[in-house]
Length: 469
Image (cartoon, rainbow, N blue to C red; front, side, top):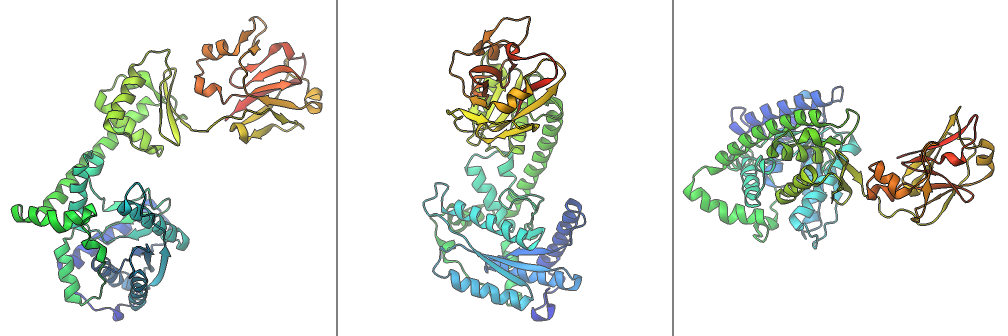
């Protein structure tokens, strides 16, 4: 817990601390709403720089009289020869404020294809999220300020970002993808200018460190901050607050799009218990609403956002392609498929087994088959089924298709090739490879997705097979 006597005081009428106190009070209230019953506690992402040093001080002034536990977290990237000195400085300052301190070391690959800046950011947030969960802290504070917000929006603009990117950073995020579950992110300095923070640090006489990499203009944000922003400021004085205001407008518009996507998602679900989308209902929407719905739906399922060009292609093929086609789009971990009149996301499972797998049934209700990413269920039936005694004494063999198999799924229907039956059932080719065949001795008795072969069922109480994934 912070000890206010160990830190210099700051005039309560000053703009920075007053704005901070209001912002932090709002953040804590939102955490209480999002996670009722959780004891309020705070973690500060503390680099030791000017911004986070002021944040640490302001948190100590706020938390001490309210009895709020605070921890300071520092991430050691190993990218600077001064990194060990920074850890020692941060630990000493956290102790002076009366805060518990923890440092985590992360390894950043300088050859990461995402770039050093982005790789370091991802590693930093991942580590901060882990520390918050380790110590049970529901709210992490960072020292992002108004000028940071303006830089973020300008960088996103240069990338051709849409509304989510142009919205910049939110003051509060109940969930941040890089922090992970159970940790909210707050930015209580986001409405305060860098110059106001600098003035407050000088007034308080706070000690802070300087990161030499901030002057390296090979990094885009540094180039924008040190070379481009001063030129913009010359021609557009006070531009940062205006850009930050534009970000707020974009956030409002994005909120409306999110609400519209929720409405469209509810109307276009193929089934209330199913994640799939109904294409016939989606075709009633404008192209813009379809795109908005797809982005929202993909984001919900943690799928990497497609580019505008790829989204156009998805919409064209999924909504406008011939009904007998089965288009799909690979997103790495999952694949987007059109099956009949539905859009479905399925995990990329790799290559199905090529070897035959023997299963010995001993009366259980089902047997997990991880090699095939499914479960074989054994149902008792009063109608025709497999003889339970035979099943107990004879291994059931699971195998992939060879191409010549035939199945008779009803007494009043002829046997047909599996290819024909799969086509009649509208089971796409990519699904078929993950539907194993079950043999008793040399007889094909069951095909996942299609059913039992009636020629091998006996009257009376027996066992039927069912495949679930």
